[in-house]
Length: 288
Image: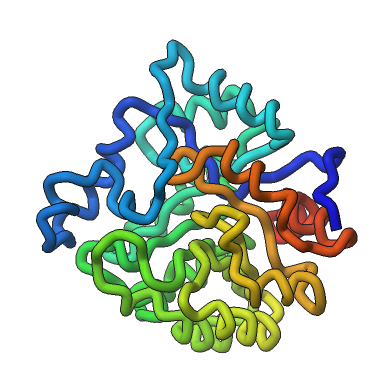
């Protein structure tokens, strides 16, 4: 039950740090009602993270990130890209062997949002589509018809849909990410690969029940230090769900890799689960 040291890791959520990182959260400003979120927090759910990453100034943030990945045996990492060429887009193009491109979804844009996904798929070869339903403005329930054209395109392109589920960390309403919404999606889109992000808390037990029910529903460990992985998910991975649970981090958004991999050896996965969790499931689900 010891974490192996010889399995190259695939991280399904990692970012390249930037001095401008706080600006990346400005899209949520219209949703904030409390003063701390509006005026004080540099990172919307920072009240939840006591060891928020502090990255010293770098001349080359891509090299800094690659060096960190090498230090922690991360062979490849999923990185978001968009239509404006910046650090992430250049990193994906310059290091296709290290970075796995993914893109956002835009449910409030209708078919134009779908066309944006197609453009990024054609330009970068994105391997996944991400979603943060509570962070949309206006918010969009994940089982809303606004997401249906996105789900259909994901099925057509064989792209997993990776979605934050559960109570969001930022102080914004939670209803769009209720775990129960997944049931309807998996029923109506049985060919859609749906990957849960951000723990599905406090409904991890329900997430496990739904993974038992639906073959194409998966779980990634984004935004959680390993010591806080839900027990229900660990138990599921050790039994019937060894092919359903995948590693994903949260650097530099809220966790350092030192914290993640300092905790990781204490996760009580069975020996046969570790290679699947760290690598093999990601390769299969994301067609890597």
